[in-house]
Amino acid sequence: MAEQVVKLRCQRIGCDATFTVDDNTEGSCRYHDAGPIFHDGMKEWSCCKKRSHDFSLFLQIPGCKTGKHTTEKPVLTRPAPSPRIPPPSAVVSGPTATTAASSKETCSRCRQGFFCSDHGSNPNPKPTNAQAVASADEAITASPPPRRVVDINEPQVCKNKGCGQTFKEKDNHETACSYHPGPAIFHDRMRGWKCCDIHVKEFDEFMSIPPCTKGWHNADPTS
Image (tube, rainbow, N blue to C red):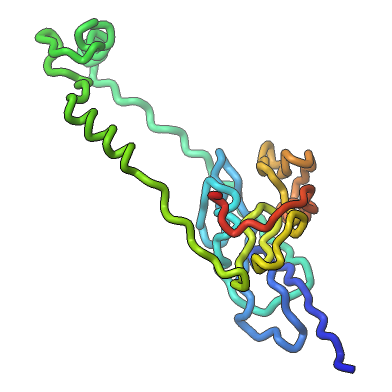
């Protein structure tokens, strides 16, 4: 009887691949070796400075380091807090410019988009009929991109939050996927999922929160 090969899951952040002890060569693992930064809705990997507003796209950013897979949880280096840069003060040219700007805002002709001899040319011209018709035609003729036809035996990667598994459509069913319907929440150094109301402080703990919902695998997040 043939010995069953045990597959292990890599614990490096950004990898999450499965491997065997005999098939773990140098360079087979791509991962991030430093923790992420979350600030003002932006997610950024401190090791490679790649960022995204969308959490799903952020998790899909490929690792910037290569090495061997491991089953040991890595100790992420904490990024140093970046100093806050105060916004540049508004440049005021003088009371004349302020008065002129406020006059345009209060002028009924300027606000309606008409030419005003007191305040110069039209500051906010209204679109012409031709421009309006062209915009309407573009909106009508714009069609969604065609959906890609996928073979039922083609391996695909599930894009549901918290899943990321490789699957074939022939094996897909209504309980095949374990995922978070989301969204992910990052607030006051806490990370968690709104769907299951679990919040933790460390990013690796956040990545280990078990999914709370069953459903179909989905390789097309826009569908």
